[in-house]
Length: 609
Image 1 (cartoon, rainbow, N blue to C red):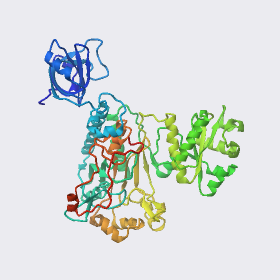
Image 2: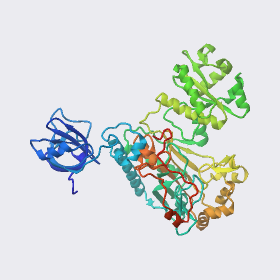
Image 3: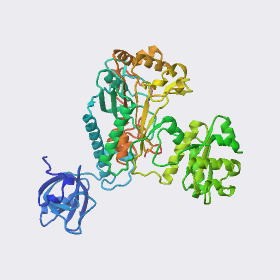
Image 4: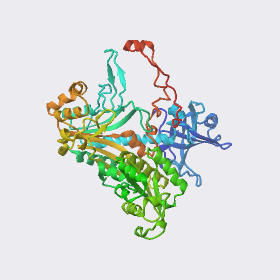
């Protein structure tokens, strides 16, 4: 390279005596009243450069005027550091470069935040100056890992005979999920393209086209309401295969993630093989289809024990069709009243009406518990039989805390899932260096929409029903299970997919159940239905969130940290100032009249800054 012979971070003890030319940024400068030390940084790391006024006065003069983030070119000789001066914290810590000449390639203003210190910085300020934020070494390292993840994925699928095929960014709006981002057409006024929410239909058409193994690192776009860990545009690994069943896909994904984690994060503990849980089992045991299985505290149902209690709340909930469920907190009997009150407020924030607690005191067997061994504000109403019964089902022991929620099934599941995670966080039960993965299978095909008074797809309209449940589409669609599956790790959904419908008559029947009549089906999905009549093979696939995967591999707190130029939580681009208005001429060319306009500004809602 014209400006350098070596990268700063690549030099080692073996390079001692070598003449090198380096170029990079001043990471840190230290003036010792004669000798000046500069840590010079580039994309591979940093190295200490020594400027000695006696050996190289002109280079020393350059170092005197340099400040943090100046861009320098330095020539010098690699030398082994003296005993006692080695810096074991950096890979180049055994050597330094003694400068013989130096030049300022570009000075720098004082940055709005420290580049050379890993300090917390206002997120909006970081995104406004994202090109500076990306220089920070911890942030920079995340994108090195992102590159390695993508490379691993490409090598993995290439070795297994997959074709990497791009699909269009400008496509047809076929609403079946979140809102589309629309792109007006100048050539066809009044008509619009849509940015793809995913390549779903296109990858199915590739299967019809005879490409039996497809993958793509795909850009996707969804105009969703503000959510904490979502982006308006994101990247996913998209995979589709023909002549396979669900187990083929799941074995492939397990092999991919097992190999990736072992190679790129060897410090992780990775229990294998990944367990398969049915949707019903996951909801029963954990209250969610995204369970964190790094720790226990599984949920138990004690609805059948409710009638043995004198507690009116339990009786009223059961009469209304609700249920009583709960969990045992290990060592939770030591919780204070303030702790319990805090958890009660937490449950109320999740939509529950509160929680019932019972601490199991003393020593010995659960079977020997007496009234005096139970501490609960309502324990005289609960009854000893109910408390013993729940303790036995939950595998509780003395010293534990029983927590119960009485509510409608959906509310109880959501509240207990959130409560289980909250308690685990407070007790540090989840090992951050364990990757506990599982597959969730046998999802319901449909869920009933009260507002629309029709069925909705649990996954998407192209998901196939299980073979033995096809007949239920005509008799009891709500009981039909799907060939859908999710890949979950540490309580987060990393991937989801399904075996697809590949026969036109089945697809049309599903559309009908979703309230899509034949005219709408032909207008929205006619291209797919027609393709099914030309020998569509059985096929299926999966899509994995690349951003979420990289966030997991880098211990990043959210996906914004692993996207080079992210939007804020409210879809605002603080760097470019987008979205923004456009000129009247552009609107005129597109035949668009703006009837409502607001100025997009930096968000000020809590959690954004």
